[in-house]
Amino acid sequence: MKASVDMIKEKLKECGLKITPQRIAILEAIYTLNNHPTADNIMAYIRKTHPNIAIGTVYKVLDVLVEKGLIKRIKTEKDIMRYDGVLEPHHHLFGSSSDRIEDYSDEKLDKLLKEYFKKKRIPGFKIEEIKLQINGKFLK
Amino acid sequence: MKASVDMIKEKLKECGLKITPQRIAILEAIYTLNNHPTADNIMAYIRKTHPNIAIGTVYKVLDVLVEKGLIKRIKTEKDIMRYDGVLEPHHHLFGSSSDRIEDYSDEKLDKLLKEYFKKKRIPGFKIEEIKLQINGKFLK
DNA sequence: GTATGTGCAAACTTTTTGCACTTCG
DNA sequence: CGAAGTGCAAAAAGTTTGCACATAC
Image (tube, rainbow over all chains, first blue to last red; front, side, top):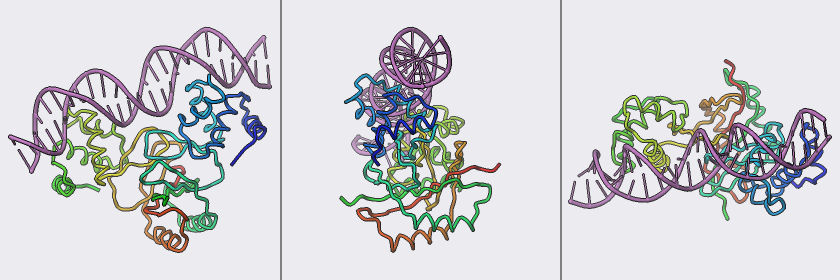
């Protein structure tokens, strides 16, 4: 997913957020890196063009973007947060012997799950979203 | 799941780990708390009976137990690790507005998924385990 | 002009590490 | 006894916070 600066500005505006170079840079980084980057990855990428950006700002911006739903946090079993700019529903492949995380989209599977949970309710719980954590090995 | 001290000792022995009071206490805590505790939760619980246990020890023990497969780390989107003593395959319900995580077992669903992925291969990836992250709200 | 956002540095939280001492087998 | 494990305290890593200054609208 590659979003233009104009698209990014549009999105920020829709959320009622001010358009700042830092926010644009951070969103661009997430879309460009596209590999579920950490705050640090984002910093490193942005430093090239914005040498003065502060780490605190990166965290603050990421928080706001998550809050507004422009990006998502990814569940991992490390104590490092990773971010995802892909908003369309999708699943994740986790490399069991690496930090690699890849997207996995599968409409047919989603339909199957939707059907299944239409009948099968979970008592005491209202499902909002189902994501698969597919753990395994990348063959490469 | 409530494991006796003898069962715990057995498990430790099977893994080639020495049987120490600290390890027993930590495993007991995880099995008793049974709610995907954090290292801190475990500490707090253990302090009652083992006032001298060190945080460093808790982390070291947890690491070894994960490494040996006696417990698992849970993927969350917080920067705090949580642990799970249930080894049978199961899924998790995540409260979207709380830190609550509950187990969800569903053999029929597991069979469905297994069938599905028997036919549908993911190129470049060897699946080892599939876990559902079911996000939603606990009605209570 | 004013509300919002940024930079910086300090603080905080969670986890890791090193090393002397202790304990299990 | 020797290898493995523990306690302690210091440090690392990741994230959050407060406040003065800067910027978007």
